[in-house]
Length: 391
Image 1 (tube, helix red, strand yellow):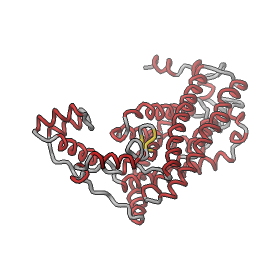
Image 2: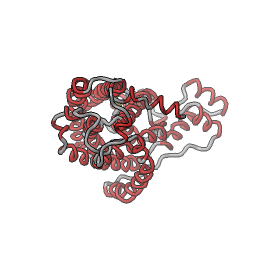
Image 3: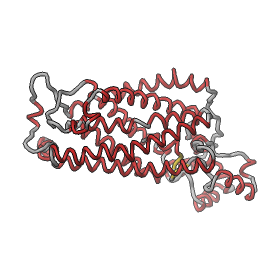
Image 4: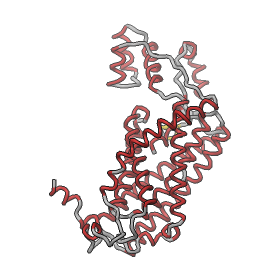
């Protein structure tokens, strides 16, 4: 273990030339630099965040949902069937025609009856509009709080106005401030919670988006941890602030969507899109990447972990371009349709006898009224208001 630890924490990889861990471990009196062990203190605090969320959703978000008349929808439950349940949990949630025909013969059921069973079973696992409203209100409150806290702190910091201050005297910069430590701790807890929630609710994620979202979470947590351990807190705080700028606006748009305030939802989504494009496609590459790639090269020069840090930032920028493309697709569809389409996760799949017996001509007419794909609110493979749930 000692050999493994020595290999992992190799000074020649993590630190600039002529800097050792001993230099940072034994600073002058009154000076303290970030240490990897500090991040471990964030793990117990995650339980505290979880407890706060439960209280918030029950005591604040729940009553707000009631005031707005957002109730839990009652969906028809699938009748118990061991064979179909096993297929649903271990093979596929949406069987193709071959599976449907095989199950129909095995159970001596009509194919349409098997389809209906899977539709009812999928609806059982879908969160209600009330549940999603409470989740979004919790995220909205957190994002608004952490953005306000971060911008208040950075407003008084010199590196907010001149990014070259991120690298002056690096890594021997001023002592670790409690505000900066608190910002990093809370952000670390939140990002780890999002990663756990991503795997906990993996059934809500479309297969096509799994890799994109997983890479996003992994890159974000790696950047936060890396910048803290490597004492790049100044530029790290700028990166977090840029990403927190638009998050609460998306959650606000989703709240308006769930509460059926369509015009407010459309307005908030437009504002979110403009700020998202501005922060991710202009500020991040021309302000953040400019300082990490060029100003840092000029002031401190490159070293091995410097390359890794910038590689992760570039991965994040690629994801920014991808998200922006998808959001632009939604904005275009919204302009064409006259409104931002609602969250498809809110739509309980139709299971009434009337709808299943609808003629093909009527079904085609219904599908065409929803758009070319017969679904509302999708960009790429996901509805817009779901897509940010795990960002």
